[in-house]
Length: 370
Ligand code: FAD
Image (tube, rainbow, N blue to C red; front, side, top):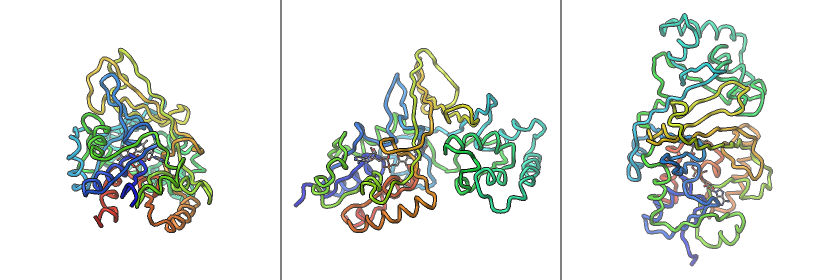
């Protein structure tokens, strides 16, 4: 008999929920992670009384009542509502696109009717675009030139590291327009930030499970495979197979975290998006505003998008045709080793919000068998 029923590679949200549920059902689990901490990209650390979102702003939001209830076992959420501000060359606009944005963009627009009319006029200018062949055409067709130029173009170019005319159109299928004065970024009925930070959730999830940190599964793959009857692997699927079919593309990010001593309030909001092309970062996060933390200092993080290469953190999959086809080929390889399940955002090569990640972990077929 092998020492463990389940080896779970990755102490992120998928791995931790799975481990919690399997342990609760009496299974012998070991969780390993190559990082020195639990929590994956949701990890928060405390600095000067402020919970810092180390890998970028994480706001929990869901329409799934069951997931919301599930999470309450591990934390209490505050009533934070995500209302980012866009900074375009010093002009400030509310996001998502709503009546506050429109009345600021166009001084003569005061009512929803006037806003609809102005946007329709600008969409009409793009009417010759039948089937948008790139993000620029798609953006102009969806929202017209003013919103596109000031709030979509530069931000997208920085995110993707290329000109808007070279970014595929599928990247933005929809750009929702809201004709009310409502700055709530999400439409979900449930939203909040866990009081005390995300890491505390993971401490509870993994309370009864053996965890080994700073341990890279791939550095000793055969050994680790021999340690458990079944393996949940939440790392990159192409890395698991030593890139034998080629590399999948990812987008990476660099965070520049700064503690500003004696600065009580830097920008007055948790999330600022910089939507012009010239500012090199896409966002500044001021972490204390997520939990209204009381501190004489503040911690801010500049977020810089980066092209991914082996060795950097892969944050976002790039789900274009080439990569989706390659992923399917990797999945076929994966089917030859049924004792390993490829899961989470890197194993499935798909962006999942936290709620979807929890939902998918709870629905994993191996848990249903227990
Ligand atoms: P991860 O959190 O990435 O966990 C995978 C773990 O596996 C990592 O800890 C990694 O170190 C480990 N690992 C990988 N390879 C190996 C290996 N070879 N050996 C050992 N360990 C390994 N969702 C929201 O709902 N709201 C938000 O506001 C939000 N904001 C986000 C902002 C950013 C910048 C990003 C990138 C994501 C955001 N998300 C948000 C999504 C959220 O982060 C994911 O839903 C969640 O982290 C997915 O969990 P996971 O377990 O699949 O992946």
